[in-house]
Image (tube, rainbow, N blue to C red; front, top):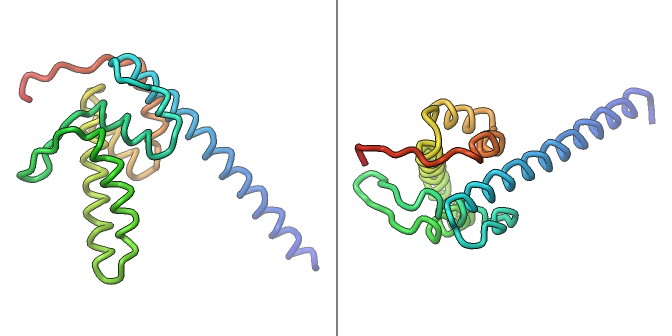
Length: 154
């Protein structure tokens, strides 16, 4: 192997390691934030925030319900894992998969907005930054000690 190939592999290794470390840190921040929010709201089994897919249940329990177009969705704790996992699986179906992916992305953005709307007045900013810069775990950690905001127009 020549020097350029060796240098390229070294840089690739460093970036891979950095990517893994950032992923682990984000996972820990998200899990601490969700479990703290769930415990503060009295959600049963807040430790589920540490388990992938079960953390969707915790987020759904925290949001509770939301309106999507003309449909009212109750019990998001059960629906969120189904929608996200099912949508992820169905998104690989040829032709219709891209429509499912777009619908899933729009649902995710609306869900994240509703989640942040419960705990901060900066819901739009947090949603945009979470979507564009993938900072959702950081913002969940930031709002972990916030109390739900009482909204009069719900």
